[in-house]
Figure (cartoon, one colour):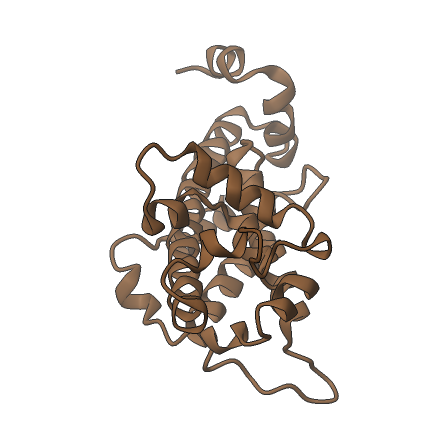
Length: 226
């Protein structure tokens, strides 16, 4: 496809950023756009695997701490999250349970999005559930005067991953310095390394888990060399 037709399909405003990044070279601009799509696919796969691993680790931990049906019970009349300080958490759980035609605990777990799991590390949700959720990261470094690897730290790190997930879901590029038309893979590389680090803290063999799926660095290198 020539650039004129490509731009007509994708739109001139969207492609302008890629063309600027490639110094007006339209062929390179099309290549960069395609590489961005591929990198988005790669990262979304990694994020998806991490999200499943995270929610399963949380579910396994809280099932032992609060019982097998802990999630639905947490939003009940006497549930641990049924408190004003937990904000929308109990409402989100109750609404998800109500939508299920044939309720089961695994189905309810699957209904929760990444943001929900992140908020279990928020101040009030973390404390009201027993302040034990950091145990899902058994290889997390110990806190020191310089670095506090507490629930807030994990909450903030998960926000970065959630923001990446949302960027990709809304078809925002991941190949630029944020807010610019400068080609740069640092944002994608940094977020990829963060996910790998959290896998390691969870004692998950990410290399085996992502075998055949992970080509993030390879695509980043192609972008850098374009």
